Length: 420
Ligand code: ADP
Image (cartoon, rainbow, N blue to C red; front, side, top):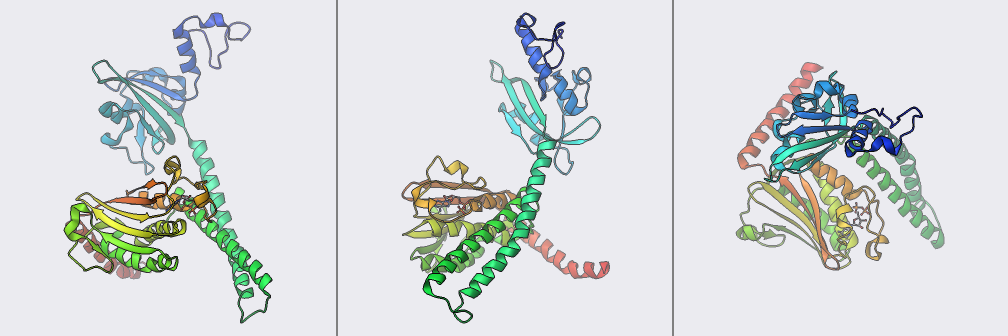
């Protein structure tokens, strides 16, 4: 360590002069000692070789004390339930086993005084000439303030949208009354204005509803009661309920089960029923309905001619379903952003169609609740397909879980009697 204090002050004048920074070593030390982020250098065994003052301040460990210790005993990571992260999932282990950089924003650091601190972690491996990981650099940051700020923002949005839904519902109700022939008499011009006001109020109501749902999804307050669902029967029923909206717009609607891998098991509505595999997943059927309805509504909303298909397929591990349309498609540069909040494609094909830009964000949050994945594949001018994958339950797992659900339901009235 050389004679520069934190903040880069040096010499009698307190100013940092070029003369103070002659060697690369001095520059390196100045950066590492001044930076607010925690920086740790781990050797090939995961032992800490460098621990900067920033790391000391965040973790509560003295820099000299941490040096020479195993990174996993100093940088103890836990999840939001304070459960230690399993060896295989620990980013500090992963970087050595995979040789790939790891970023993580969801874990907590257990400080020396056992405080749980949300951190943003960035770990980069140093690969040796033989291709093995020689060392790793860990950069971490205390994000407690940022998380608290996000929480305050989410609380505000949640409260505001909840409060605003009530007057909007009242306005919508009165506008509906004003438009009702049996209640009022209005001329055509007034009807035209009121119809526009009614449509905008409905849009506003939807926006508040979506804002509320997305705020809940973000801070984990979205209610969810996962049960075993057989997706084939579930989607067939839902497709039947949704069909009307597509047909009203003159679009053909189909439900397809199976793929090339399950040719003998394919079935489409109107076709003959054949034996098909049973696709069991663990989801909340009400939440899943929101997802499918949203994807379907989008498909119908953005498609002028052609058809909308809901399809289901899968293999031993995964159940996959999709909503496909023959609409305008999505530009490839927009596709990676579609699931962000408020993102709407800015092209003439879809810009003029009303929407909140929150639907796909909410869909993704719900799909993630059940360890699923959602993505889009699209070709401009040809159409889009939104895919969702969920882990598949075997018939035996499904039966066991269903038996447990049934037992739980039978016990529920007894438990409520006992507690009353
Ligand atoms: P909204 O439809 O309310 O704007 P979403 O989050 O559901 O919000 O969709 C985000 C954007 O993605 C839409 O504004 C639209 O530009 C694009 N998009 C979604 N689904 C489709 C689709 N089936 N075909 C073309 N564009 C789509």
